[in-house]
Image 1 (cartoon, rainbow, N blue to C red):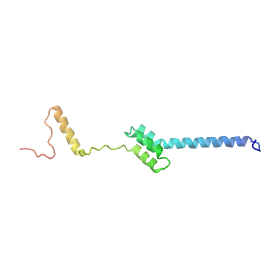
Image 2 (image 1 turned 180 degrees about the vertical axis):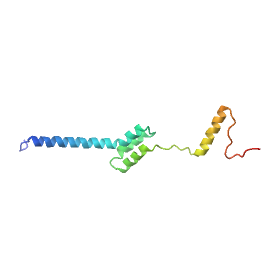
Image 3 (image 1 turned 90 degrees about the vertical axis):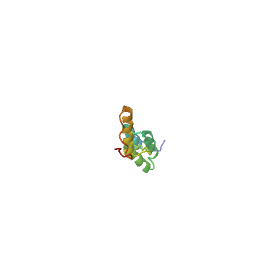
Image 4 (image 1 turned 60 degrees about the horizontal axis):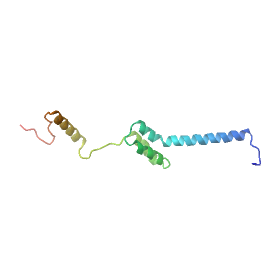
Length: 113
C-alpha cells in the first residue's frame, strides 16, 4: 500500500513520536493550568480569574507570567473611605461602644481638661 514495508523500527519510531507528542501536550496543559492550581491551593480570593488568565494568556507568555505572580500575591482590599490607622481607631471605638465602655478619643479631638 505504501510502496515499502514497515519493519519493527518504523513501528518503534511511530510509537515513540506518539508518546513524545502526548507528553508535550500534557506538559503544555500542566504548565498552562499552573497559576490556577496555585491560586486555588492558596485560597486566593480571585482564583477563578487567575485560572482563566493562566489559560488564556499562555500563548502570549506575558499574561501567563502575570497570572503566575498574581497567584502568589492575593488582591489587596483597600477601603478608600479610611486609611489603615483610621480604620483601626474606628474599629476600636466601635468595639468600645458595643461593650458599653467609653470610646477612646479620636485623634482629631483634643482631650478636655
